[in-house]
Length: 241
Ligand SMILES: [Cu+2]
Image (cartoon, rainbow, N blue to C red; front, top):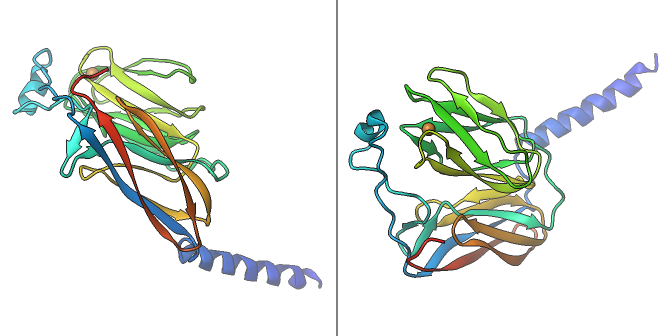
């Protein structure tokens, strides 16, 4: 009897929201994009000696270089995390997992961004054991051995922070987890470029983080549908801290 008066509007509301989600972000959202660059003389990265694990030494010929400070054309800095650190409510954790790989005695990618409470899957692709050892300050610390051919480690992080990742078997293995409260983040590519899309109009704090040189922040006010371009510049020295 009365049911159709309830069901019909509900169907209409559902259909409209499905159509809206198919159309992508609302037209009035904007973008903050730009580059991360350096001035000064960056430290020289060194070839990684993998002779303790001959399979890896053979696989990387010429050897991989250390990744503490990776530069690109036009004074670009790669592997810098750029993210919204204030100006929006925390984003809900996505159910989709992020993937981290141990491959050829390297962590791939070198810097892996994710959100607080987002599932993290750590794979090993190597025919020998690793012992992955993240070193957090706010989250609980752990290390886990992973034999070849075993399923990925399934985990997540409760607190936002930048976590150094080491391997207790291969001391040269070195990477970072960037655990963030926002869904608006990027890691710079070899041109130092980043793009934060789908931002509602408002005033934001944008922060960049580089593993040797730390964080920098800028305030950016974004009007509806606007694209703003900003640059972060790090003063670098030939020495690692
Ligand atoms: Cu290892």
